[in-house]
Length: 290
Image 1: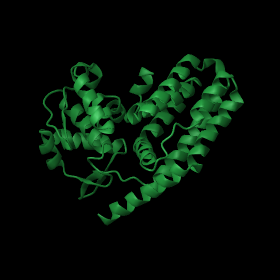
Image 2: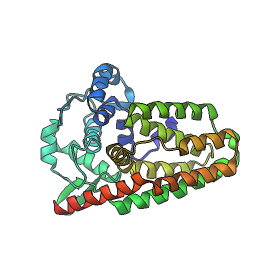
Image 3: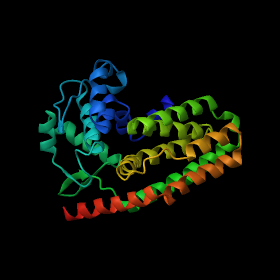
Image 4: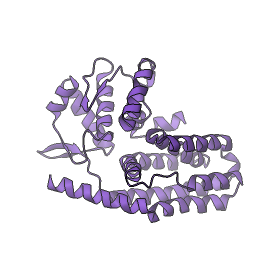
């Protein structure tokens, strides 16, 4: 899994999601307590290449030490995902640099990195803004992800013995627990691991990379999807996780392909999907008015 993570184009966003700061931003006060408890340990993690990043309400804390470019990149990711920087909001480099207590150079570098990851868009002679969420783009990403996932299932189905069943069972149990706690950050991370445990069993490196890219590009949409689900009272652990686990346990290759296709159809036909599309269109309208 480590090799796969390092191949993810949207590495900063994925790494931030798994940090204590990422959990705090999504879970609110509960996450803040987790950050306080884990801060000393997180500061020693080599993979973060950075020091402490404080959180004080909605205002970004000044970066105190660490690899500045990396910390700025992860902090801006945090601000976008947590909603401090809204979809479509203009980004003034000087203002961001002043808020973070750094020069404009690492901010400019971070924004360019985020542009390559689809989180920021640059406009000639106007500057940069947070990428807008679009119902049309979401439908495109969902469709691409569906076809790639079904293709990966076909490859895995050729030898179902390669699927790590014990790991899949543990991931499903952890998903149930994260869902029961309302832990969106953990649930999203576990969902990714669950699906990729199946995809990687097909042993098709380039296909897995493509899936990884599309999966991460759709990160904001999936996060908003779960938030909208919680807001409208439709937050659930979708039944397709258990269906996929059962066909894997039965070593049913045809069933795996059918269940993988069915999980995307379930999403598209669900009430939460309709509510989510409506929510995205409202965001688009609001952004146009601004």
